[in-house]
Amino acid sequence: METRLLVFDDGNGDDLDLRAFVDGLDDNAEMIELEAHVCFVRSGLSVSELSNRFIAVAGSRVFFISDIASSKFEGRMPGVYWDFIKNKSLASAAE
Image (cartoon, rainbow, N blue to C red; front, side):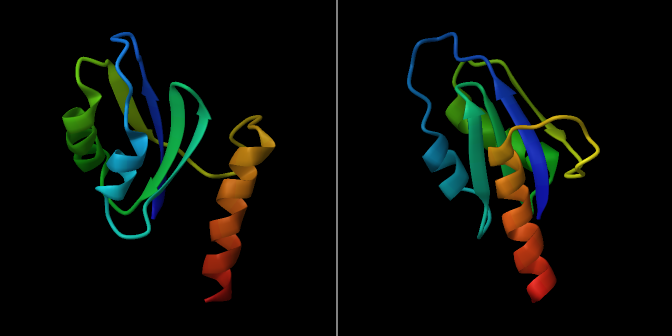
């Protein structure tokens, strides 16, 4: 499972069903929303496959999805992000 950054413009005024998007991904895919237009997605799918799947729910929105490193040295991130990252890192190490 890799962590990706998803940023989109919600300029068309329609509600975006992010839950349906995540539910349509691979097993155990997760998303954490930092604000209305910025999310982190954890999935086993490639960036291009995530992009293809997001197109189906994005409508006319402009968006991008990018790989990110989940290192604590990647800059200042809110505590909720680290809770999201650490939760799975600790669980994986225990297996």
